[in-house]
Amino acid sequence: MKKKPPNRRGISTFLDEYRRLGHMYLAEELLKELKLLAESLNMTRTGLMRRALEALVLYYQDARSFKKPTLFGKKPSLQTWLMEREDVHLMTEKVEELAKQMDIAKTPDEKLILLSKQNLITAHMINLLHKTTMT
Image (tube, rainbow, N blue to C red; front, top):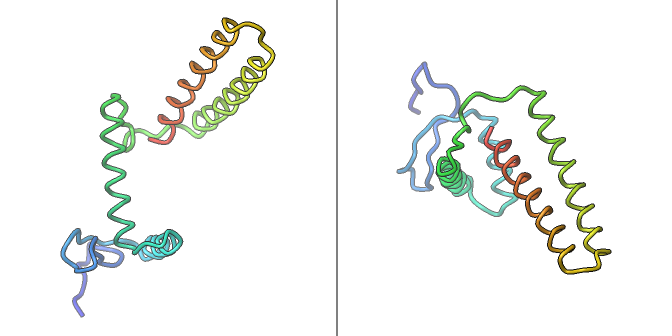
């Protein structure tokens, strides 16, 4: 059995079943969690790792195209994180309230105005969710 270098911690693993791609060291706990997750998704651990890395790269490229690549940047404070999540809840309530108002609106113009407001709030929610999931 080959000894791992002293500056490495964890277990040596590969990103493919044939032990040719993506050699890296991972913590045993992480490998256990990846195995459980992969089993629940009916995938192999290496397949899950490849898919997760591919998704991360695509997600980061999308964020970069919106000039919001904050994934590995400075993390917000817990206070900011909690406030942004509370904002999402408040926005959801407002969208639901506007939906009820649309049900009782009498003219198509009134419904269109309410729908526009609802779309604007939803767009803000999406931006906020994207920002908070990238941190």
